[in-house]
Length: 79
Image 1 (cartoon, rainbow, N blue to C red):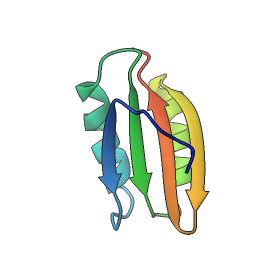
Image 2: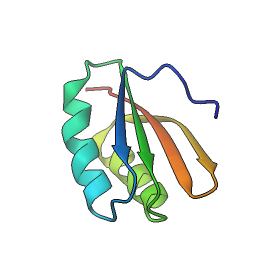
Image 3: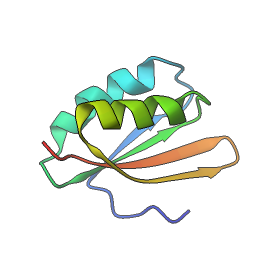
Image 4: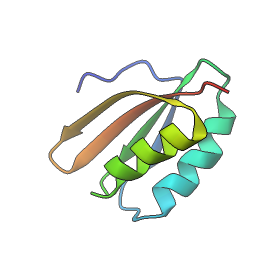
């Protein structure tokens, strides 16, 4: 997979909505502004959830990739 070099990784495999959003909301506060958080999930609803969450919270969704059922989201903290 191409996403590399995140400042923090959050494993949300086998967690269903709303847990990935709950966890990412907490984890983004653990990185500095400008740093990145890699979220790994397998909930099919994670893609629209993370897109909406990033937009609403003002963070940058840098990259999204999927390999089989595993989704990876690279999010940059902007505030």
